[in-house]
Amino acid sequence: MTENLSTDSTTVEATSAGDRYAVGDVTVSRVVESVGSIGMTPDQFFPGTDPSAWNGHESELRPYFLEDDGATTMESTARVAMQTWIIRSGGRTVLVDSAVGNDKDRPDVPSWSHLQTAYLADLAAAGVTPESVDVVVNTHLHADHVGWNTRLVDGAWVPTFPNAEYLMPAEDLAFWDPVHDNATVMGPGAHQVWADSVAPVLAAGQVMAWSGSHRIDAALTLEAAPGHTPGASILRLVSGGDEVLFVGDSLHSPAQVLDVHTSSCFDEDPAQAYRTRDRLFTEAADRDLLLLPAHFGGHGGFRVAKDGDGFRVAGWSGLSPV
Image 1 (tube, rainbow, N blue to C red):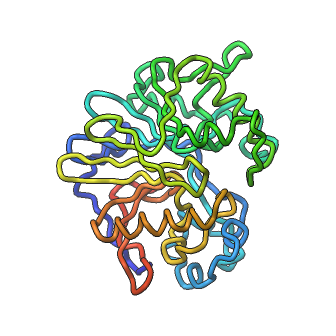
Image 2 (cartoon, helix red, strand yellow; image 1 turned 45 degrees about the vertical axis):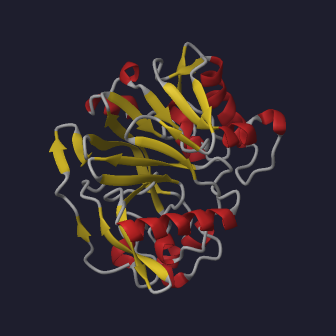
């Protein structure tokens, strides 16, 4: 990473409902459910991480990606955002990932249990009602990406977005289905996630399973990007000569740009996750693409450049920081 990284504000429109980033004829904005410490130090979140990717880079990491708590870099805790990307494309509204959700029982992550957030009100402020959503993309099926798939109504979990098609990777549907009882780094709580946030949408007939790649419309294409989970995916947006990659949980911190080899403790296949990350960074550097990860606070997205045998962050998106 470098000092005084520039931000690109030329394609961002500030509105009363928040920033909208223009990509050709498509607009991108976000709703942040929460942002804060994940409660893990760098070497807990990223086992085996190289301290040189953190030490000496405090100005890029704090306050958006590392708590500004006065502790040393390696003793501070990592900071992440839970958020949904809103894409308006071809007259339709597409949501990318649905955060943690209200009322969910998450015994493995107590800070996610029985939340009462203003997520739906914040969506409404951005001009999105549940009924107006056409497509929900779950880049993978972890709890913090499927939570608002459903909401609690009269004691039952029902799809939050009644008119939407929910796009879920077939590999993740197979992996997380409790009937297969697959071992996972996420622990037994994953079965509860399936029960309250996936199964009700399947039962409602609103899920489309896809594999390999899936074209949503002329501008949007889902592509497999495994490692974090077997079905982990990215979303490619191409419009008007511009291109953006929504890279999900391919990375969780800018430190992984410098330390590309190190995966998070939540990656099911760390070696595959590294290969995916390296591939994405190489393409983004070669073609100057904006990357929008699922959990980046701050400006939300960044551009990457090659730096010797590795990479560095070359600049941030023009979105207002959170």
